[in-house]
Length: 248
Image 1 (cartoon, rainbow, N blue to C red):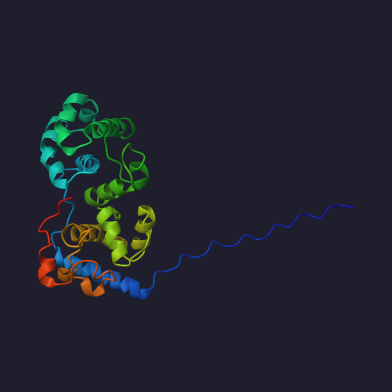
Image 2 (cartoon, helix red, strand yellow):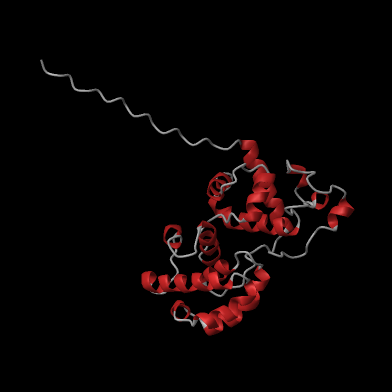
């Protein structure tokens, strides 16, 4: 007697993504608008002339300040203006230039590998997609989004330590994983706002919403912040904590 053909259970459709609550979306966008008014000059605080320079200085900015990176940038690119020149750099000479940034041996190795990869894989041109950028040595999603947004105008969210801290304090997300946080926060805003959103949160994190002692009493978005009170709420005391420019 012939066997009956095994019946395959129908596949369940993947659940549709859950839309963020409307109240959260409105509050998040209100916070971003006010931060935009508070920091009208918000931008990438690393100096650069083109995509290659931005890629390099972003890699160099790890575990040091933008100010220090900006200080060595003219000397670095005067000596090595192109990926080909940097790929052929003398290791000792390169270490001497970026020495003030700390971790200079590891960063020298990263720049040599990165520039060589640009020459070998992309004819010395910085690629314009996230998938291609993250294949380069020393380049993760954060660095890739910095380059895409600021050199090419392609929407991306830069989840650095400041962005991650503020997005959790503001209640945008409770994710600590940078990639999950990027997607969760991105769902609250139109793509066209992603680059400036990143600048707004990073500038506010560097100047007001500090990791250890946020200046809650001087914060322009305190009324919408669920974490209000983590720092001093007295306006005079809080004002003393404000910084006029970023340190990191």
